[in-house]
Image (cartoon, rainbow, N blue to C red; front, side, top):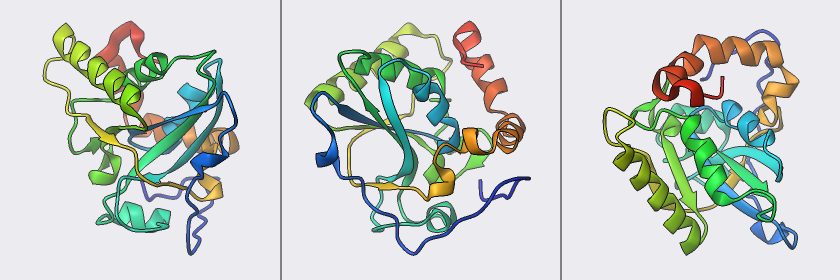
Length: 203
């Protein structure tokens, strides 16, 4: 995904800050999902009633304060991911999981759609035992449904430090809608989602 599309602006900073989970207000929770290009994982969550904010970022790796260029170059162990801040009284974690599955190809262990490499793999990062239980049950139920031709390869892992991505990546679909749509269509994301999920595909 290290391509420059019309209207895109590359911003590289020396260090990217870690999200402070202690900053969550009373009645707020957070969930972390990796679904390939983080540009494409913000819109489905932003559209949900009860989601307060989404943040694109990097997680799961060992390099501290990684930049976009470092992550997409490989070798950091980080995934591109989104952090979803939500009100559990208005939207459940189970609903967030449902949205996750219908927006990814959970059969692809090598990336997502046109984006290849470990940084684009799918993953669910749980923050507590309840999220772990629900994510594991959700994955097992999807496999048991035999809706997909092969077993799900999405990993379920404990959450680690979430590094917030550069400002130009936040809400990219709103800042540069034409570039975003050009990338999304050209990457084959929507076509593959329709192939996998039929009428449940988001686009």
